[in-house]
Each structure stands twice: as structure tokens, then as C-alpha cells.
Amino acid sequence: KGFSLVVKRADMITLSENQWINDTVINFYMSMLVNRSEGGPLRVYAFNTFFFTKLCRDGHAGLKRWTRKIDLFSYDIVLVPIHLSRHWFLAVIDFRRSQIALYDSFGAPHAKANCIDLLKDYLEEESLHKRKHGVNWDDWKFTVAEDVPQQQNMSDCGMFTCQFAECISRDAPFQFTQQHMPYFRKRVVYEILHSTLL
Picture: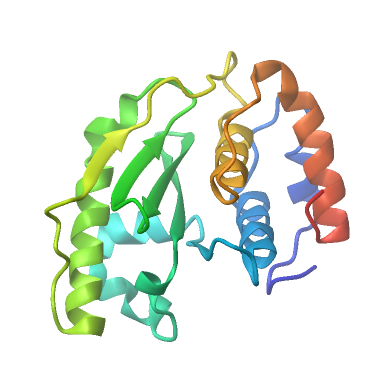
């Protein structure tokens, strides 16, 4: 238990090898990344796994209260775990580099899902709502990251998503492959049980 989230035994079982990691595990892990960043060199915020689904359905209007007490634009990095077509991947809004990027461990089939456009529209509306002016998009880059580690099975997309977020949240390179996933699954079990990242 922690970060206003409760991880139950059934959630932990999804960290067993060849299981699909569920949203509770991913949300708790993202919360640990945010917690680690407090007082650190990078200010990191993470939306929960329901954010993008609600954004697709209701647009910015349905999400205003989610950031009522939060200034997204004061963060360096915003992590957005996305679940589409039974597949997890990560969107990252990087305010330092003026960039929105997608990180997908299964190629980039979801680039066509207009994820970047939806996030761009969301930020524009959020800026108009909070700052009374839009975002100057002139120097922004929108990309699907290439040469990122790729999964070799159908069950590790959630773990890859967590590891992409872990590295990005501390500006570290991706130095993992499919063969590291069994280790990462065990490690995340330990980290959740102790509510701290190793």
C-alpha cells in the first residue's frame, strides 16, 4: 500500500513470468518514479493509466479536475502510459526538449492512433485553461522513438513500458533487452513490496 494506491495479491500475480502486467502495477510503479524524482534534478509527473483512455473519450473537458492543483508546465517530464489494442506503450512529454515522443517495444503500430495529436491538443487546452494562452509549438518535435529495445513475446509490453519510464525519468540510456525482463519482473515485485525503487 502507498501513494494512495493499494496493490493486491491478484495484482502482484500479474508480475509472474509470461503474464500481462495490469494497470494497478503500472500506476504504482509510475508513482514510485514520481516519488523518486522529488528533490532530484528532474521534475517528473506521471498520469495514471486511465488518463489517455479518458482523453480519447472525453477530451480536455473531461480531465480538467485531474490537474486542478497541478501545473503540468512546471515539470521537466510528463510520463503517459497508454493501453491500446491490448498493448502498453509510453508517451513522454519533455518540456526541456520541447518534444512529445512515443516509446513502443513492439515496433510503432500505434503511431497511427493519433496519440501525439491528442496529447498536443490536450496541452494546448491545458495551457489556455491554466495560463490563458496557448503553447508556442514552433520549436516542438513530435516523434516515434526508433532503436528502442523490442519485446520478443506477447506479454512483456507492460514491463518494457515501465522500464522505458524508469530510464527516461532519470535521463538514463536504455540498456536492457528482452532477456532482462524476468529479472525486472522480480525486481518490481520487491520494489512494490518495499514501496521504493532499487
